[in-house]
Image 1 (tube, rainbow, N blue to C red):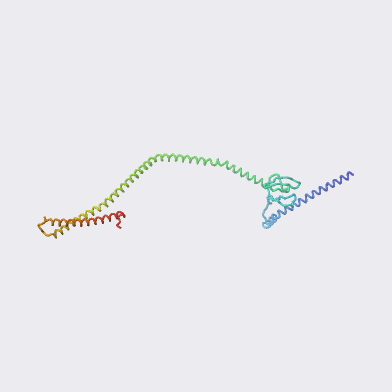
Image 2 (tube, helix red, strand yellow):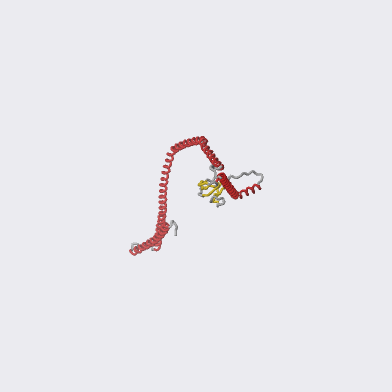
Length: 295
């Protein structure tokens, strides 16, 4: 009786194990079908490209794309597509699936077969390449002082030469500077002398203009005085011609008559002289007022 019960239990257990294995196979088939469905366009593109370019060597891409699902069912909604090398944090694991969170905070389920503890080969190669580049740069930086040692010596030599030239130029400047100051002093003296001579020249020119302008009225006055004298002489001659010769020059009537004739002649001469002088002075003042032009 016990043997039959043990046999029944063993058969039941074997059936359970078989059923579990069957379920796993179905899940693997469904996951495979899902991934095949995701990669179907890429596969068709590769087949089409291979058909056009026959005879060339091709390799399988290392860019794998995996989906994060909303639940453990692979037929559920895909929340995000991951690529090779994306970093994930495992929250919980089941027999076939793992609950993960990526760097952006998206949480979902992913097939455990696509997870690995170590970095993929592509990322290791990238890290190794970056490290190699850093080593090369470090080596170049280390070699720069050695390579530039000769350049530094040349720079020091040129710097010393420039310092010597600077010292020599300062010495020449110290020698020339007193001469420059002396020349500046002479130039200042000459400038002051030039200003003084210019002022004297202006004064002399002004005095010369005044003298020349004052000389003209004096000459005109002399001419007028001579003309007045001539007029007096002509009047006297005319009076002497009209006066009869008489011995009664001592007669008072004759004296008064001659006196009035002289007075009238003198007044006429003074009027003529005053009119001429007045006209000349008026013209002279107008010319001086308008810059020598007669208006």
